[in-house]
Image (tube, rainbow, N blue to C red):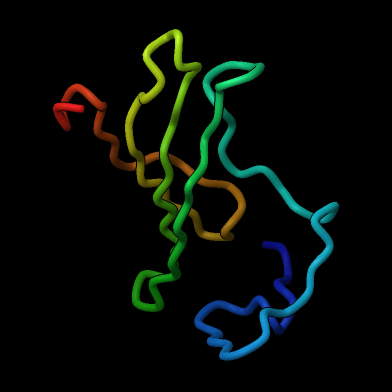
Amino acid sequence: MMAIPRWQSAGAKYYGQVPLFDAEDGVTVREPLGEGKGWWAGAPSCIFDEESGRFYLYYRVRKPRELGRGVGCRIASSEDGIAFEDIWSIGKEDLDS
C-alpha cells in the first residue's frame, strides 16, 4: 500500500486555502471508453468511509456528441484511493435522459 502524505490523509479536513499540488504527480484512476475528442470519464466526487476503510468514487462516462454523448454514471471502490473497481452503474437510458 502506498503511503499517503499527511495533508492527503484519509478523513483530513481543510478549511480556507487548498494545499498546493503538482498536477504532473497526478494519477489517472478511471479511463474513458475511447480515445480522442469527446471521450471522457470525469465529473468525479470521492469520499473515504472510515468504517469500511475504503474510498468510494462517483464519476460520469461520456462519448462524443455525434455518438450520443452521455453513457451513464458509476460508483467505484478502492482500498488505496488509486486502484478502483466499479461496483455500481446506471446507463443514460435508465435515467430517461
